[in-house]
Image (cartoon, rainbow, N blue to C red):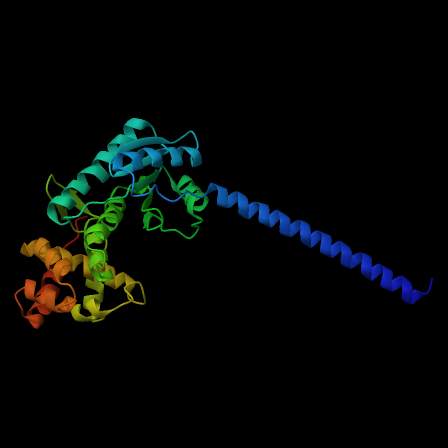
Length: 306
């Protein structure tokens, strides 16, 4: 056999080997992808079912995906699942889901959900991240927890505290009453509730860790005007930390003045007739410059408890 024919034969065999290995690898990848997809949480039950039927069907779906460490509590429109003992899960459900939801409906929201809302509570980062990846394919997740429109689901490491849960609960409920809520207002109201006292009829925001961010921005003269905040279509962009702090404490300022519920109703019912800033200034008395200066003056007097 000539050297040339021998080299051609070797190349053919090598190429066939590479093709076969590549095929096997691709098949394994396909199998892995298929397995991951099979773990995904299905779409929520249809709205054509009654709320009780939706909740029952959701529990059945969850039981088919979660392992035996999970318990379940049904409190329509909520289905709550957690990898903890049942009494502990009931306690979290009452104090961080049911009571805050009732207060939000009393204070702000006229329209209630017509779809089941799923709340997944995990007892630590390992479990939280494992199931966020398995059920939704989410890997780069917030340390505390998050709300996803995908299946109307709240996903939480409850060991970090209940504040984030009430924050995300606000997002989950506001969409039914105020579907086109602007980002700055949505995040301002929700973040007000991440540090709060929950009463029977209202949620009262208290000072929290976002205050130093606001005061630092004021001191360095880097805080944008309230008008700029309301006009920014990318709340989560370059100024995200300051945006959260400014929006949260603007809501707290409205709370202090006793106009927060009025502000919410006026924002919701505006229908695009006025700009957000015009609605805001009218609720506060109609003087834009006065609102800007008085808000900053008030924010500078606040002292975070040690």
